[in-house]
Amino acid sequence: MPSRSSATAALLNLSHELGRESRALAILGEGNASTRLSPGTFLVKASGSNLATLDRKSLTECRAEGLLALLKRKNLGDSDVTAALLASRVDPLARIPSVEAVFHAWLLTLPGVQFVGHTHPVAVNGLLCSRWARSFAERRLFPDEIVCCGDASVFVPYTDPGHRLAQAIRRETTRFIQRRGQVPRVILLANHGLIAVGATQQAVLAATLMAEKAAHIFAGAVSAGTAPCFLSSRQVTRISGRPDEHYRRKALGL
Ligand SMILES: [Zn+2]
Image 1 (cartoon, rainbow, N blue to C red):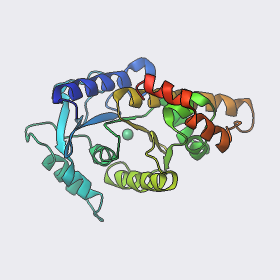
Image 2 (image 1 turned 120 degrees about the horizontal axis):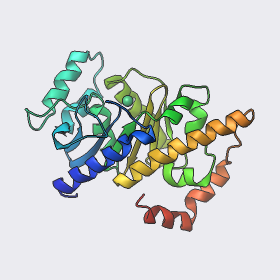
Image 3 (image 1 turned 90 degrees about the vertical axis):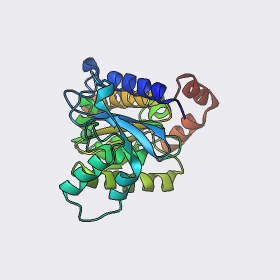
Image 4 (image 1 turned 180 degrees about the horizontal axis):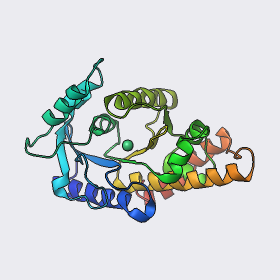
């Protein structure tokens, strides 16, 4: 486990990279990012703060336990969620964490996941608001998309943001892991946005940027004809198993 100060510095850096205005991944208060601090606690962006200008005061340390318990409860009201978010703060004077802290808490329990970044990228969201949303998640168009975003992404049908969305993310991601035997790198939320997870801040940024590039290419392919020419599952498996691609992933810190 990295030291608290290095984890904080890495999370601030990732937040600033994800919030860079020219990248159009998140504007104003959109998006959030988190990192694990200890087996039971994590650091996440406070509600309403801006990724691009995030500072230490806008990060809230949370205990995961109470937020994870929300995932198992039915018939929860908004006030129950707010109470759990407030109670999760290690420092009771800290700002309230983002409502999306619930899915951050769960994703940070997955093996190998140390950082989570959630954004609303323009090109990705363009596809997620179209009939191509599921194909964009489940198919691949070019080798670097596989290297940075994995063989496929989790697809989550539109769900009301908050604890219901966190429950849907847990359900679809668990199915993905059971089916494929691996933790995803990217989770796509229909009509909403993207979540990237990884062992390093570089992996989260790379998956986010490459997914956005892939979305531009997908949209270009659609506008050039009737349907994109997807790579076959054999071609995808070949790329993800190639030793030189493993080397490239390692060199890029992915
Ligand atoms: Zn969001």
